Image (tube, rainbow, N blue to C red; front, side, top):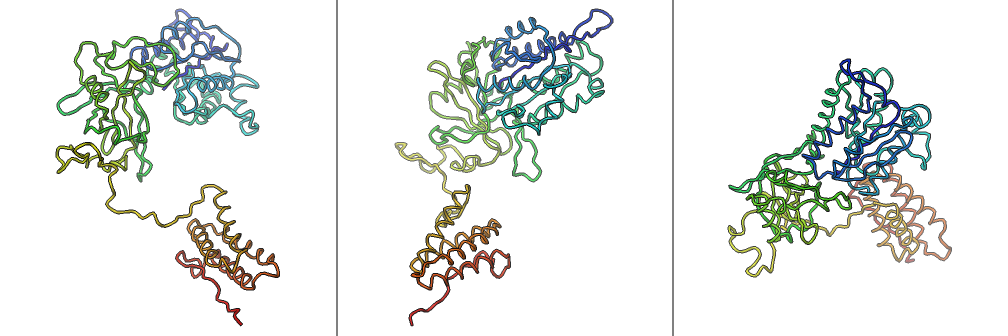
Length: 512
C-alpha cells in the first residue's frame, strides 16, 4: 500500500516554538523531525513500501516520486523551502493526480498530511472549500473522496487546545469524513517539543506502519515470517452483530492442492510473505513503482545459507505447481503460492479468502478435504485423467424455472414490448400473450412493483382503442379482461394479488 506524505510549507509553519527556554525551533523543524523518525522506521521495517513526498502552500510540488530510497526522502526534507499561504484543496488535487498516474484507481493508498492546523485565508482555504461544497458544478468538484481507496492521517503540529480555540478541529474532522473516514487526526499531547512530536508520530507508526509478524506452521516445521502489507481486519456483513475478524499470528498450513483445482479464486487481499530471519538482509531494490509487486526480492535471494522452512515451502510450491491452504483463524482460510515477477525472480504470496468454512464452493468445506492416500480410490484416477472437483452439492438445484430479473431498464422494456407484440396478434397468440403477462405479473408482485401493473394495464387499454376494424372481436375482449385483472392485482387485495394466481384467458364463443 503506497504512501503519500503531504508536507505543509506555508508561512504559518515557520512560527517559532521555544524549547525549554533554549534554542528556538520552527514548527516546520518539528514536522521534519517527526517525518525523519517515520522514514527511519519504514526503512527498517517497511522497506518494500513505496513512498512519495509532496510539499504544498498555495501550489503543490512533487519533491520525490514514489520510491523505496528513504535516504532520498530524508534529503528532500532537509532542503525544504518556505512559501506563502495554505491552499489544501489544490494539494489534494495533486495527490489524486500523482497516485492515479502511478497506481491507477484500484490500488489503496495512505496519505499522511503534516500541517500546523492553519486552514488558510480567503478563497482556497479549507474553510472556504468546505463551505462551498454544495455550490459547485461537476467540473469544480472537491477532490475528496479520492477515486482510489484511501486512509488519511492528519498530523497536526499543534495541541488539541490550540486547535479547539477556533473551528480548525471541526474542519479537519469534516475533511477526514470526506476522505472516507478511514483514518485519524493526531495532535501533540502537551507542550510543543521534540519529545511530544516523537510521541505523536510513534502513535501513527503503531496505527499504520507496525509490521505484522507471524509464525507459519506445517506439521513439525515452522518459520517466523513477516506479512506485508499488514492484513487489515475484515468485517463479516452476514453476522447479526458484525465484529472485525483479524488474521491470527499463528498461520497453520492445513493441506496442499493443485493450482488447476483451485483455479483463480476470489480473494479480498494479497500479501507478500518474508522470512524474518533474513528480512534484514534485503538490499534496496530499485525505486520504480511500475507494478504493485514488481521489484520485491525473492525469498531464495534473501535466505543466503541459513536453512529456513519458508524458503523450502516457496521452492516446493514453485516446482510442484501447487498451493498451500492456510488457516488464518476460526473458519477463515487463505492460500500460499509462488508468484513469478520475472524469469529469475519469484515471491511467496498469501491471498486471503472471505471468512467462511467454504469460501470456494467448488472445493466444498475446507475442513472436509483430506489426503488423497486416505481415499478408497484415487480421486484423480490412475493417470490423473479426472478431478474430484467441483464438489457436487448434496441437494441438486433446479435451474429449469425461468426467474425474471430486471437489472437494467432495457430488460424491463423488452418484457413489456413482448407483451404488446403478442397483444397485437390476438387471438392467434392468446396462449403466448397470457404466458408473458403472468410472468411479468409474478415478478412485479415479488418486487412490490405495483406501479408497473397499473402502467401495463393502461397500455393494454390503449392498445384496445387502437385496434383496427378488421381485428377479430375476441382481441378487444381479451385485452380489456387482462387490463382489468392487472388493475385488481395492483390494488394489493389478497384475493387478486396472490403470487400463485394466474390470469386465464376470458372464455368467449364466436362460433355462431
